[in-house]
Length: 140
Image (cartoon, rainbow, N blue to C red; front, side):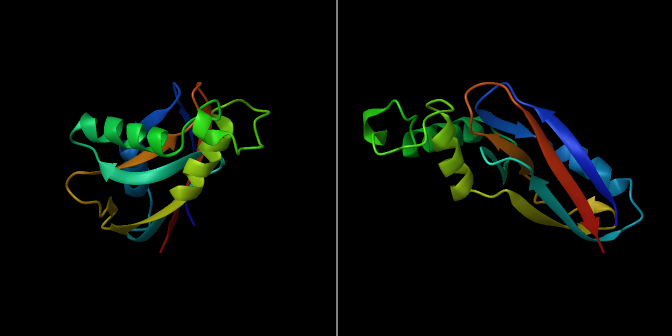
């Protein structure tokens, strides 16, 4: 079964689209109909399928999650005990727990069956840049 490991560099918190890389992977395989499983190998970022037309959507999502789970140096986060990796680390784990680390996308005729405005994103929850690994696995 076809599988590939993508490396994605982030510049810090935010959404990073990698739809094109996933589409290229699906087109380049002999499996024409099946399921693309996308899995991120980290605990402080996640995956989402979201609108890719208006960048305001990505900014608003990032702002929403930052307000929902602020950094541990925020007064509302005094209950957090895991702080050794910085004030953005435990909030990143919580955000990843609220979203997904694995998603499935149907494939037909070698194409992802995404909606017109849907894109696949790595949602980086840490403040500083990271190198993230994403597994793409296509099964019939």
